[in-house]
Image 1 (tube, helix red, strand yellow):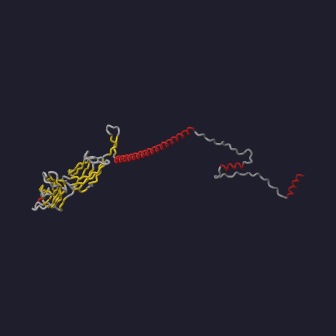
Image 2 (cartoon, one colour; image 1 turned 90 degrees about the horizontal axis):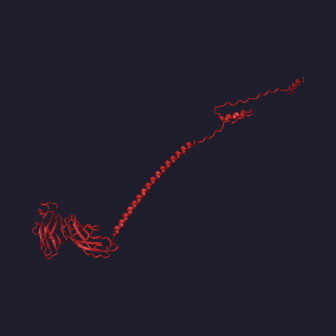
Image 3 (cartoon, one colour; image 1 turned 45 degrees about the vertical axis):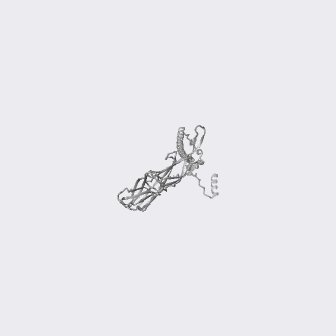
Amino acid sequence: MSMDSTFDNENTSNDSIPEPVAEPVVKQAPEVTGDQSPDSHFDDANIMNLNTPGTKFEKNSPSEKTKKPDPKVLAEVFKQSFEEEKVKSKTSQSQYLYYLIVFVIIIVGLLFIRQLSLQRQIDEIKTNLAVTVVPIQGEGTITPSITQSMKTIKPEEFQEVSGEVDLSVEVESITRIAVKIFDDNGVELGGFIKNDIALVNNKALVNEVIDITKSPSVSVGYLVIYPADDDINSPISKTVSLKFSRSTVAEKINVIGPVKNQLVNNTDLDFVGELKGFKNNKIGVRLVDTEGKVIIESQLQGLSDNTSQDYVKFDQTVEIGTLSGTAETGIVEFYDISDTTKTSLLNIPVRLR
């Protein structure tokens, strides 16, 4: 038969073994491991189904919509933020106000101190100028007047003086001055008043000698100068401290009063001092003028009757009576009463009348 021969001829002509029929290969899906992500699963699925009709992958999950904020929540957040900013603003304002108040207080304090300083300077200038305005009675105009002032030149502070004190003082707008001398026990020793001081350009220099007419009770004192038309406590009065001269014999007599050249013009004379080593603590004294006349003679008794190796004070007043004669000077003599010759141990010159 022709069909068989054809078949036979084909096999014979090729002299080969017929090829086996290929079966379709089914690709197995790879095993899913724990490390593979969902995206890799998605890719593998696409590869497996590329040629499969109707199996094209489609995204069916709708896209997630953005959620709209709640207006109430926004209002609350805005309100809370506003309150916080308000508190911060108040705190900042309070701090600013505090610093402002401190700054104002410091400025006011500095201005107050400055004002006090300026006022003090003005007062000092006014005092130095010492200008006052005095109205003229009966007229509508006023004229300036210089306040009174004084400046002491002599005696100097703590200067030693005797019975005559040299005074030199500059005055301004003063035509009368008064001077008094005191010891530190307040005993007035002398003084004078100077009238009709001639002013040149409202100023003058006064030079005078003041007499000490009473014995001092202590060896220190002071001098006071003041306007005679005012009192001794005048605000422009001047005070000068003084030392009174002493008369001594070493280890025997120390006389505080009378002082050298003291003016004896009273009816008595004060003797003040101390003695040592005399019998019964007594010493003789006499006042003799330059004509040789004995005006007084007496004995001074120490305040202790017992003989002592230390000084013993004496303070005694001797009556003089009325001075007679023409002599203007004299000598106060001290002597030992146990000496029959009455040899003078200490002489103090004085002025009479």
